[in-house]
Length: 277
Image (cartoon, rainbow, N blue to C red; front, side, top):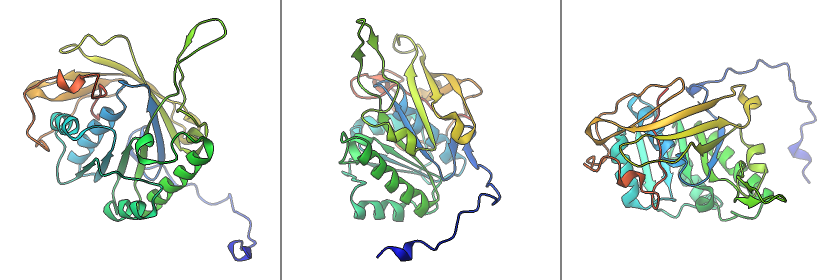
């Protein structure tokens, strides 16, 4: 008997619409679900690592659950972005499973009152990966529970569909999340990451594009041309449309003297950027 779940009252659309609280103007809004996806080496993971590093220096509490990259690669790139250890919280390789209620409860407990939580990536933290729309919807429900339980914005990093050849023999680049259209449908915003031209290696900048694929949800259409550059002292900076680099101070781990080469190793790390907003 599910009668108790329905109180018989109709919804009221006349309520005052709450204002959007932007944590990062036009990109990250408080209490929203964002699906961020792209092909490999398109700056997905590193963009959000850099973004959270800069947010941490502004007093925002952020959490990065990293299941995609190895610990050594993570430490290397975190050292170059230099987050504030008091506000930047990081876990790597803990075998997090968001379809495990105990793991979800742990995340909510660890991130009470946080501003931003990033999971990297869908294929690593959701065991239903690859089973289509039903599992994408179930995952989104769990992410909404985390949003409700913590008050944070949540980002799920994901990949695009595989390349395919059309009827005329042309190579077609998929520009939607892999396996399930419901991923975008369930999110408040979906951001497509794309590389822009061939990267020539350090010290040359890495160019990429960020596009909001669902501008109607938060009424903030954007397509931003971005670039990552080496900065003095072995760090990284993000530059682009409407953005300017903001320096970071204390490193999470001692910043290495390997200014660029290892952090942009295509075999291990997505080339990527910092926050600037």
